[in-house]
Amino acid sequence: MLLLPLLLLASPGRAVTRSAGSDGRITRAHTARVHMIAAPMPGWEMTLAVAADFRAPVTTTTTTTIPPTTTTTAAPREVPQVRAAAVTPTTAPPPPPTTTTTVYRPPPTTTPAHEESGQASWYNASTGTCASPNLAFGTVVTVTNTANGLSTTCTVDDRMDPSTGRVLDMSEGSFAKIADPSQGVIEVRLTW
Image 1 (cartoon, rainbow, N blue to C red):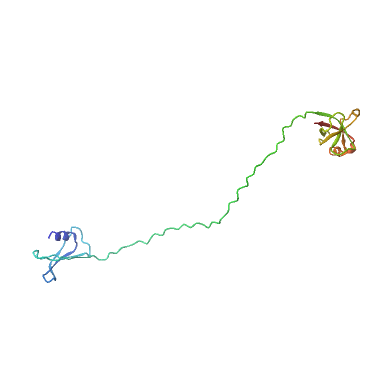
Image 2 (image 1 turned 180 degrees about the horizontal axis):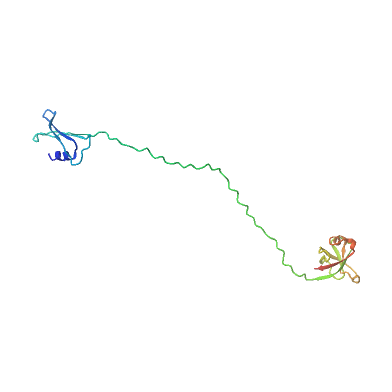
């Protein structure tokens, strides 16, 4: 009987008690209106089957009827989709080739070991050769025309008369590199 008051307190609406007789039929034993402290929920009904006679064993069945619940579901939120712009595949330019640059630097300018200035002329000899009154054979001499700055080299392979007053006689081909052969005699600077 302790179960009934608790169920009556917890159940809104009307409670009906039923009991089963010896033949197994359930008969209505008691109907009561249940008053709740809180307002009852409309449409709730609870049916209780309780034994009327506590002395005989009875099968008890509890049936609860609850109306279907209406559930309001909000429409699912649309998730914004981010779409990437079409990207044109590009190939990166190849890296510049690795190069090693060697800069040629001429040796520092040094004052030539020997220098002489004077007049030079030309004579009929092999191109690239010259005659000197005092330089050793095989000496390579750089001849610079002091009037225009042009220069050439020649190798001493002949002797000339020192009384002429010239410092060098050149082949016509070598002379033509620094002056017009029609000039005949020019001022030069010799270095070796």
